[in-house]
Amino acid sequence: MSSLCRRSGHMETLTKPAPPQETVRAGRPLVIAAVRAIPVALPLSKPVRMSGVTIGHAYNLVVRVETKGGDVGWGEAASAPTMTGETLSGMVAAVEGVLAPALVGEDARFLPTLISRMQHAIYANTGPRAAIEMALLDLAGRANCVSFADLLGGARRKSVSPMWLIGNATAADDLAEAQAKYREGFRFFKLKIGVKTPDDDIQATLMLDKALPSDSILCADANMGLTRESARRYLGGIAGSRMLYVEQPLPHADLEGLAMLAGATRIPICSDEGIHSIADIEANGRHGARGVSLKFIKLGGVTEMMRAAQLCDRLGMAVNVAGKIAESGIGSAANIQFSSAIREASWGVSLTHVYLDADIVRDRLEIVDGRMAVPAGAGLGLEVMEDRLRAVTMKNWSTV
Image (cartoon, rainbow, N blue to C red; front, side):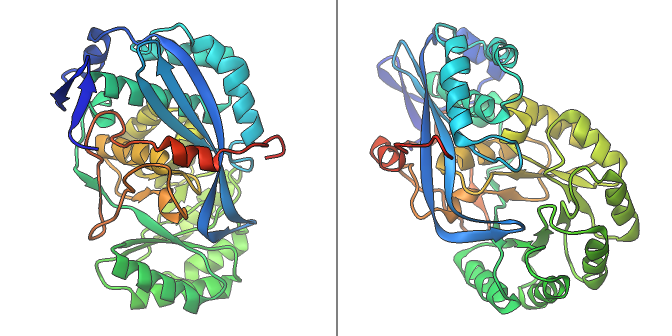
């Protein structure tokens, strides 16, 4: 998409509003005519292995919000039964049966009111609410010729540092993949641990640490797959490495174990599956977590994600902004835009469209020299190809 957008029948240059929310409210009415839930199955180019599961397809909810004037906004949320408790069929039902009726006829310019309506209309269901809020911000940005990041207060950086997930059967395979992805432009790598034995995880980590060039960054993610004993063994075995952080080594409820690990290693611990609210961030921070992984689907939307990022800034905790395996360019663009607008994202950005066999947006977001640029243009800054979307739309999602 170019740096121009269409509004009121003519082309206008994209400009940064100040303050952003007043710009949205000052524009023409954006009366919601339809909120459509679209269940999709996105094939991965290669199955992703992590503790307890191997993923070959991503089953996601795409939301399309349209106004009476014909403006359109897009949002996305991944189903994540083991993380949020949400299945694809449940997410579709939440949108079609509860959330859409609560929003149709309302003015999309008044986002806080619409967020409140969704919160009162249904308990939890953070994924569907996040996808709709994403679509509403995309819609408002497109209608007012401003970017998604501008609606969050403005971009602080022009690009972000995405990471590549590695999780193979052997350490040699891990290294070969990391070296190949380094040549493609990646500089930030996250090793999936808890799938191999602890000794094999240690071997893979040390091999990557030694072989990858000095400008690369390495972290690890156990997805709750370790015990206290195996986590201590792993952390002890990699003590001399340049590991930036280890993510969610223990089950999310084991805060005592988190405190024990944090006190036993210099390597920072990141909490992910344990973060679903502001209170969770505070609790994990008190028990030694030095940073958190923030996902729209866990916190219920962009506004709550911004509150979480601001809290982390006040607490001195690092932030990783992450998509679930695997989102299309819609979700990744939102993560990039969001990451550009928050003060701190030093623990990288997990952009998961890179694992898809094909995307549903016109221009695939690409990495150059370890960075991915914030999409230029209004809203999310991308164009959804509805023919591609139809090709991956599921006919039967009742069991997913």
